[in-house]
Image (cartoon, rainbow, N blue to C red):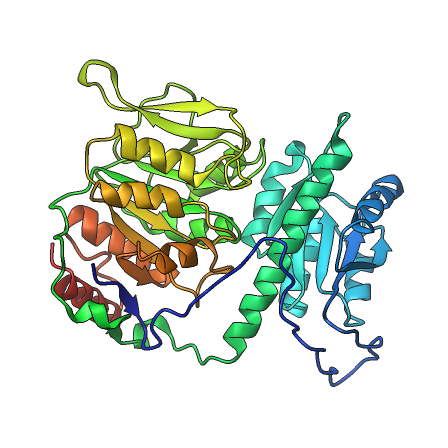
Length: 424
């Protein structure tokens, strides 16, 4: 099956192994003004922690000292001091508590994104601050660390920090790869075929309609979803199920944020709930979501389970998608968005065996091209598209119409070209 891509560069290869050292990124050049600290070899990830509770700063510091290839270079009590320290130039990852005096984590994250875009941000938070945490993730924070409690708190904190460090390294590697490229505006990029095989006739035709849309996403997901979901039409005639890797207590806030800005209702799924057309349902954080056949011909229902993590994730994209492949008998459109790792690859393999169509987000617009890259590398992607083209493509495939007549003429020409290359 041909793989279509917007852009003339084709699909670059991607490999990422969890825990592998990031390539040497070199030392950043000095800024025009200000005094910078001594540059350091980039084999260690240089970290700042900001939290107004001294005890928790010590706990995080103790865990970080046990991890390889990281260095805690600053520990401060609020966002203002974090910004001051970051301005000295040697911080690569800032871990910020969402609630701090003087300047909180959300405000600090926004300022870091504006003033120091090369510095990655992770947010420390409890469920009580879920809404503000989602705002921080929508403003560029790459990961969430839920403040742990209980007897195994230090073990869970270590796992969270390992994940954040892996994400920070992957994002920095992706940024370095992008520096060597000139990225054109999407509307200016011509439609090209991503591989020689694309010149061959399509092996299988697209179905006349799709009965279910699936989205799997991880690192960079809240920001991507806040762009994609509100762009979908109010009359989307099929259900949409989303798996976003998040901790328990945070998915409901993301769904609420999306519901306020979207034309479609967006909710966190409940156990035994029936899926319905025109509604977006999220897998709750901390549990797996599966799809079960409806009884006596009724619509399929959601099943929530606390079985062990898959691919280190709960919820897992693979868990949902494998259940859809086994229990859903309609036509499926699967979308793999930005994220670290390969969750979703095996599930897409099962879906493709049942005739599903797959869209993967391209590398240029992904925060980390891990999940979509794994699908592309496995030959499972039918189309590779930039983020801002995916909503229009979903509308075209599901509803047989070109999205939003107010879009630019260049956008419409690009969408017509997509239809010509992959006729319905």
